[in-house]
Length: 298
Image 1 (cartoon, rainbow, N blue to C red):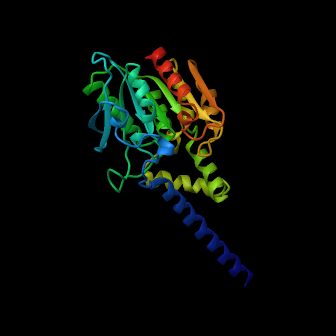
Image 2: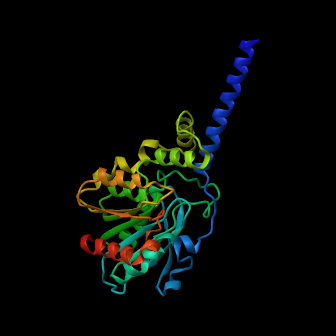
Image 3: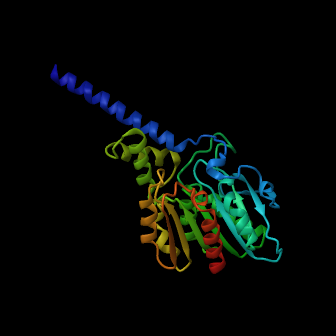
């Protein structure tokens, strides 16, 4: 009798374990379609909201997705410099628009892209940068091949920062990179969120979540950890921006990335800064430091 009860309990535990792991892998893979919120991104309309000239453009990824973007030209039509804005996991191209006006005024063309998202097709999943890397590479192709721009910098936010960091490590076309609110390790940040939101410890659940996530997303977990790649960016420069009050991606991720990076590098440890909301914290410092960085290195 005791043996049967023990086996039954073990069976129930096993079912709960695998079903929970499946559920949480689904939460990672499936993106909600959310609206831009002014308190988070400041500008939710088209670039004309800020008086910026722009083109609605598209570009195609290596796996056949056609993605939309805003191309905002510099006043000097002869400039060869551009900055690529890459949004985070649940966001869209409006996320970087807080910085666009200052960057364009400083003499740069700007391309703000939409990465793959269910907005384009309901079957699209989130892979924490693994397949999203193709989106950043295709955007670089657009800037270099279609627009003929030879000096390209990137500014990424959250997952967009992690994605851009990994691409920059492998693609020399990116000459300088700014990364706001990036995670150092994908499973670390997901485990931290699981504990904060649901009170779940990392073990024993998260290793199985990772296995389901990798299998269902057709990805390699080791290839979505920017901490592994950031040192390879040198001697090209990086600028890491991270708030100490970030509850989505803890500040220690930004510190880990900065410590792992090689020179030239700089860090803005933004006291009381929330997740990717450093412009709202101090817009003058945010704009000035971003433009100064690109002016120095592009």
